[in-house]
Amino acid sequence: MRVFVAGGSGVIGRRLVEQLVVRGHQVTATTTDPDKLALLERLGAEAVVMDGLDAASVGEAVATARPDAIVHQMTSISARPDMKHFDRWFATTNRLRTAGTDHLLAAAEATGVSSFVAQSYAGWNGIREGGWVKTEEDPLELMKGTAAQAGMEAIRYLEDAVVEAGGAVLRYGWLYGPGASDTLVEAVRRRQFPLIGGGTGYNSWVHLDDAASATVLAVEQQAKGVFNVVDDEPAPASEWLPYLAACAGAKPPLRIPGWLARPLAGEVAVTIMTEGRGFSNARVRRELGWEPRYPSWRQGFREGLA
Image 1 (cartoon, rainbow, N blue to C red):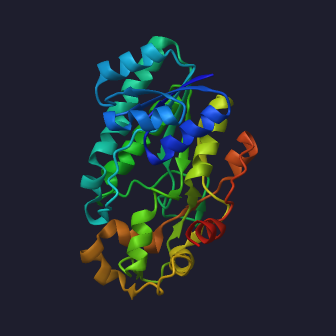
Image 2: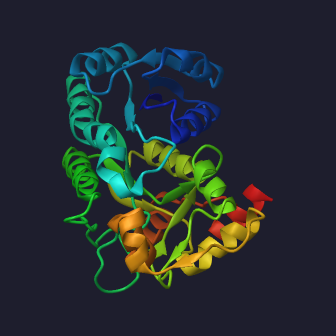
Image 3: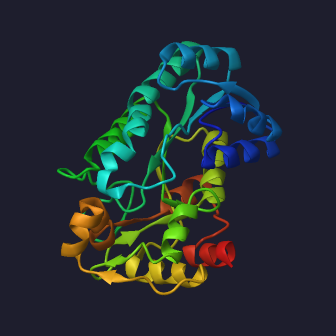
C-alpha cells in the first residue's frame, strides 16, 4: 500500500514511518524542515517538504505521491510546555487541525483517496460528568472559559470532518517515550511538576510505539470512526506522578493546593490534576486487534526510565 504520512518527522510520525516500512508499505512522509529530509529517507520513506497550512503545497504533494491512504499527523507543539497559556502553546497546531485537515481532505478527494486516518487526543479531557473512564460514545470536554478551549474546539472540528468523510480518528492518550516525555521527566526530576490538590484527576497514557502500531492497524484495515488509543490503566495523578518520580530517580513530587496552583500554572493544569478523566481502549482492542507493547504506564515508565 502507498501511504502518505503528513507530519512524518514528528515524534509519532517517525515511528509510524518506520513501522509502515517494516510491514512492506511504500511511504511518502512530509516535513516542514528541509533539514529533516535525510532522517525520513534513512527510515525508508520518500521525503517531501510540505506546508500543511498551504492548500497548494498539500495538493501538489498528495497528487505527486498518488497514495492509497493518507495519515494526518501534523502538529506544531513546542517541547517547552506552557499550560498557563495553552492557547498560545497550541495556536499553530489548532490551525493544522482545522485548515490543515481541510487541505488534506480536499487533496484526498481530488486524488480519489478513500482511506484517511487522523491524530486526535484523549489524555485527560473527557467530559467532567459521570464516571472517571470514558468511551468513544462520551463527548470530549471543551474546557470552555479556559486557555484550552480553542484547542478542544479544533480537535472537535478535526474529528467531525474526518468521520464525516468516512475516515478514522485516533484519540491518542498522553504520549510518553523518547522525544515525547523528556521535558516532563526533567521537570519531575527538578521537582517542578507538583501534585495539585488531591491529585484526583485521571490521565490515560500511551507509549509512542504503541500509538504508532495502532495507527498502522487503522491504515491497513481502512478503519472508520473514532478510537481511543490508550493503555489499559487510566490512573489518577496521585498514582502515576509519584511512580514516575520514583522511576526517574527523583524525590516525591511537591504538593500544592489548587488555589495556589491556579495563578501559577493556570486553570488547565488544575483541571487536569483534579478533574481530568481517563479513557477506555476496549474498542480499538476489539475492532482492530490492537495489543499494546506497554499495556500499563507502570511497565512503560519502569522500562523506559530505568
